[in-house]
Length: 71
Ligand SMILES: [Zn+2]
Image 1 (cartoon, helix red, strand yellow):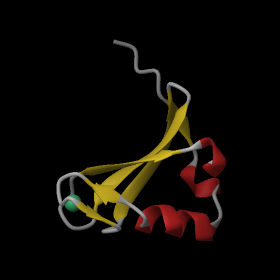
Image 2 (image 1 turned 90 degrees about the horizontal axis):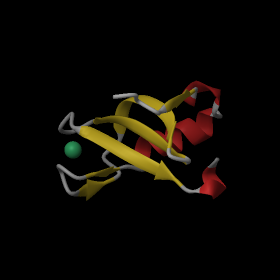
Image 3 (image 1 turned 45 degrees about the horizontal axis):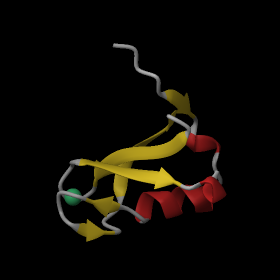
């Protein structure tokens, strides 16, 4: 099956913005906010931009969905 994600370059964001995204997370596994993520990847999927990384506490995938204002 074709993966219709479009990779975006997270590193072109400003340092401040990157730090904010890396800190402001929600982890479904920990059920806790703002634990932070590592290894961020950014992509566009079905018209929505996601930042995906690993929870700093448990290592599970955390996803941040961006609203249009954040683009
Ligand atoms: Zn977690």
